[in-house]
Length: 96
Image (tube, rainbow, N blue to C red; front, side, top):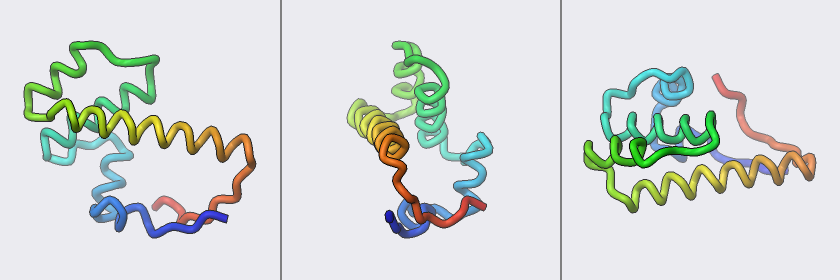
């Protein structure tokens, strides 16, 4: 069984902020919103384009941040697939 702290505490964000992100609402922080759009595009399509990366670089995100976000996304996808294959019992708090 997996147990964890609430995601909002791990992310350093309030629950209402995370709900707004899940609901595809802007956070008011341009750099963060651009990274969120990139992750959504990764999740909803088969990839990204050079234009996607150029757009988030122009507002100040560095290549290292793009690598970090891409790695976090890939780790999340791997974990999800691994848990599905192994029928892992997940003991996390319900999303509000």
